[in-house]
Image (tube, rainbow, N blue to C red; front, side, top):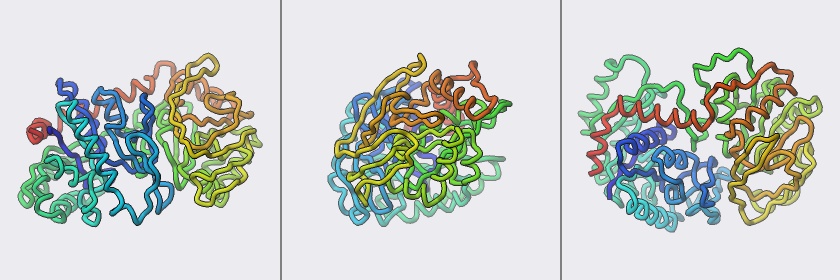
Length: 478
């Protein structure tokens, strides 16, 4: 089987970025390439057209490879519901829960599903670019590992290590990763890449030479800091890193996205942040939430728990004040459910039972055991709207707003992804600006969101083409 495992010295080191870039670059070269991640732990997910749920990062990587995303690209998805419990998705469908004590010992059936998916995918393409999770040096989890070196051992995959030098300590992290794993795993570590470098590369060279001398791993290249690149991230560390330096639009629209303890699908607001003149800030600051032109309550993997936090933090009072003053508020999925009159959740909530919502929208919410996974469409003010649904909560609404309802300056939708629809987003933001008293207006000449995403993917591939020895990486897979 031909493949490459892309690991990292830590979470958010750049594994997803490198996999995305390699998928697009090798696809350009006529190689039938596909991404893979055996297990993703993330609350940022997407519904494929076949109705299966996978991580957003793998969905984007499949688009980069120009293949149709399905659950074969991310066979196991763990969605944290608390610090000690995660909801399990296997081959795109709900498959129970995993508690903290089972993480290292209770995943054999998940490993089997992941290995079967890798074999299925390998049989249909020339090359699989697999993404690891966290770090391969998490030796405390090695016995049950099937996403890092456990996957590499099973299928004899060479492994590439990505190190984020912007954080500092990258050279030590590379050597430490190599030094901590056992001999058989160490033999699979075949090369490394430095990511997010700024400055004179010659200053870095002596350190790279020493790492190569001590480990035997060649450096496959140094990727520069890419200012205008953002990704559909799986990692909470990446939330809020969208602001492109080239946005010099004069009139601004400020958006405060509330950071819940269990935020899910934070990528919903990527399209807002990519809109010229729109400033997005992820925050829990009461003054920022009070003064912003728009406040967004995003999705949540623990709606009742995050609603309790919203009240205890004081943000709920600010949201209620905004509604009373006609200041715009948007709730998406879990954030929408919080705006209801009441929520009855015996499914996801550890407490269970009925709790009062913020009562800012004339709706009620009942959580049912069956998860809704769908790709719905609608129309608003003559504009086509498409989204995707991932939820247990069923909301009693009138669809006055796509996937939800509205009351004065408060809008809510159970659908994710609607803001990626350019005409709808710009028309709705124009209403938001008017309600907020802002002079912001959309730039009709700006690139659409899907086009911007494609431009970003191509920019990543161009950077890898220029700065990495991708021919070396390709030879490692053969």
